[in-house]
Length: 290
Length: 256
Ligand SMILES: Nc1ncnc2c1ncn2[C@@H]1O[C@H](COP(=O)(O)OP(=O)(O)OP(=O)(O)O)[C@@H](O)[C@H]1O
Ligand SMILES: [Mg+2]
Image (cartoon, rainbow over all chains, first blue to last red):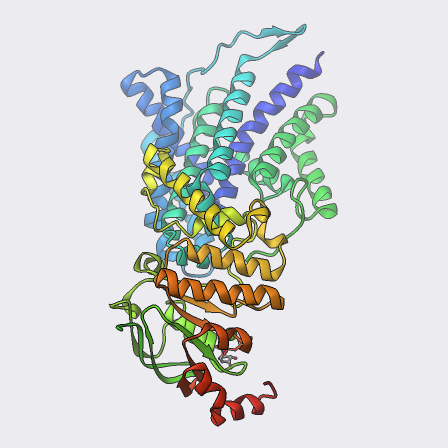
C-alpha cells in the first residue's frame, strides 16, 4: 500500500497547483490574458496573512478562512487600478502590466518583509495517521479536502447562481452581456478578486510545508499554468483535473523513476499530450472565441 | 399618439461609404413599424446606431422620452430598449433558459454584493428571473428546448430564443433584425401573430427589419423604406405595395 501515501501527497501538491491554475483560468476568461503576477499575489497575500497572524494571534484556521476575502480585495483593487486603464488596448499591453505587477509584488515583499524565509505555523497535525495499513499525512488530506470544498463552491457559484452564470455569459459574449445590462467591468473586477482569493489560499496551504519568502510561488505558478493547459485552459473543471493529474504524475515519477527529472518529465509529457490533443485532455473540442 | 422613437438627421459612414444618410423618421407609441430595403441598404447599421452599438456621425434620437444617444449601452434595458440581432448574439455555451434569464439581468437585480454573498434578495431575484424565462419560453413554444445548449439548436430556434431573451426585459421599444430568417412559412406566420400581439396587447413599440414581405405586410402598421441609407418611402403597407419607387428599388436589386 505504499502507493496510497504517494497518491495523496501527489493530489495535495496537485491541489495547490489547481488553486493557482483555476485562478489563471478565471482571469483569462474575464480579461483574456494569463496573469503572470498570480503567484506573486498569492505570495504577497500569504505574507499579509502571516503578519495578521503574528499581530493578532488569531488561530491559524481563522487566518486561512480570512485569506480568501483578503485576496479578493487585493485582486479587485489591482484590476481597478492597473488593469482597467489598459483593458481597452491590445491584450499584449495587459500582459505587460501583469508582468510589471509580478516584479512590483516581488520587490515590495522584499522591501516590507525582507529576504529571509519565514516559518508558517502548521495548519494540520503533523503526526501521520494510519489508513488501511499505510501512514498518511494529515496535511495532505487536509489540503485535498479544503481544495475539493473550494472547487465544489466554485462549481455551485458558476453553474448554479445567476451571478456566476452572468460571469460566464459576459466571458462568452461581452457585447450581448452589456446589452442585457450586465456590468462587464464589474465582472472583470470580481473575476480578479476571486482569482486572487484562490491564489492566497494556495499560498497559505503550501506555506507550512515550504517557507514564506518571495520565491515561494515561482515553481507553483508554472506548474499551475502547465496543469491547467494539460487539462484544458478553456474549462475550469478541466484545468483543475489537469493540475491534480500533474501533481500525482510528479509524485510517482519522483518516487519510482528519478526525483531530479520529475519537473522536466511533467513538461515533456504535457508537450506530448498537447501534440495529440491541442485543446487539452478534458475539453471537448477547440472552439473559436466569440 | 406620442412617438416612441423620433430619429432626426441620422448619418453614419464607414470610411467614405455612407451607410446611413441624413435619415429622419418617427414611430408612434405601440405601433409596429417595418424597416425594409435591399441588402446593404443600411438597416442593420440603423439598428446599431439606435442601440448604442455604433455611434453615428450625426443625428439626434429621442426614444421613450429620453436622449438615446446620451445613454451608455448597459443602461438601455432599464430604459426599456431591447433588440435582437440579424446574426445572433447569444451566449453560445449556455442553455436556452440561462440565455433567456440573462435578459432579466437589469430588471431583476439584487446588486452584485447581494448576488455574490447569496443573500435572500438575490435568491428571490434569481427565482423570479427563471420563472419569467420559463414563461417566455412557454409562450413561444420553446419549453422542450429549455435545457439545450443554444449553439446546438437550429438557426430559427436560436432566433426565437433571442426574441424570448429580449422580451423578458419587458422592453417598451423593441427592435428586431430579420427575426424570420431561418424560419419556415408556418413559423414565420406564427411569429407575425406574436409580433402583432406584442404591439396590441402589451403596448410594445416595434421596429421590425425583415426581408420576408408577407410577414412585413401583415404585421406592420407602417413601413419605411431605405435604399443606400436614404429614406425613399414611408406609409401603410398598402401604400408601400403600390409605391413605384419601392418597386423600382427592389426590382433594381433583382428581388421582389
Ligand atoms: N462595420 C462596418 N464596416 C464597414 N462597412 C460596413 C460595416 N457595417 C456595415 N457596413 C456597410 O454598410 C452598408 C450597410 O450595411 P448594413 O449591414 O447596415 O445593411 P443591411 O441593410 O442590414 O443589409 P442586409 O439586408 O444584407 O442585412 C453596407 O454597404 C455594408 O457593407
Ligand atoms: Mg442587416
